[in-house]
Structure formats: C-alpha cells, structure tokens
Image (tube, rainbow, N blue to C red; front, side, top):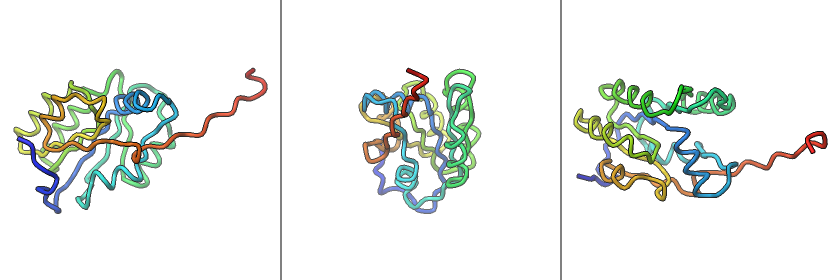
Length: 170
C-alpha cells in the first residue's frame, strides 16, 4: 500500500541513509557526466520536509572519499560518511535495522532492487520507508514497496567545474 506525502506527521524523526555509489552511478548515467554531484543543500530540506532529521549517513565503497563531502555533511546535517569494503548494501541494511526503533521514517537514497527485502522488513517493524533516487535508474519494484518515492531531478544536482590539465600532464 502506498501513502501520499500528505499523510506525513510533522513530528516525525527521519534518518537518511545514502548508497553513495548507487546514487553517483545513477547521476552519471542520467547526465552522461561524471562531474555531477548531489546538491545536499537543496535535496536534504526537500526530503526532510519540516520533519526532524535524526541522522544522515553516506555509505560509499572505496577508500578515496572526499573529505570536503564528509566535512560538509557533518557541519550542515550532523551527518557522517562511512567507507564500505565492498558495496553499501550490507552496511546500509544493518544500520537501517539498528535505527528502526529510533526513528519514524527511514529514507534510503538508492534505486537498487537489492533493498526490496530491507524495505519490507522495515515496514513490518512499523517504520515508514521512503526511497529517494533518480527515477530512470530506480527499480520499479523498489518504488512499489516504498511508502513514498522522491524523484531526484536536475534541481538536486550540480556539475563540478572541469579540472584544468597542467602543462606537465600533456
């Protein structure tokens, strides 16, 4: 059963869990540009929508995670970045189940169908589950299972300026 956004209680506590690799790949596929990044300053307020943000965790595979991103998420949203050994699926799922009793709503930022069983589990625990992702690259089954779907659109990303090549690199 799907609920409209108007059913949201304003005193809700929200956790946002981001599958960074999935979102980055989706943005790159959507735009054809690897220099496209999420604009958290516009996206997070839109997702939270006058609810209380309990925490924001950005999961990303790999060791080379932007320290600027980590610093920005921490300063503006008390968020954190968690590097993952492989994909974010398992660490994100574990964190979601740990948070289920502490928040009213979990927003999963990913379009990956691997999260369908997690969504079902969280809902069975009484947690409202919302998905935020690029619609074109999001599993329709995932959208169907969620209580609400937030489409990430061009208003929610920006393009980094192209890096200038040094003369020595030529």
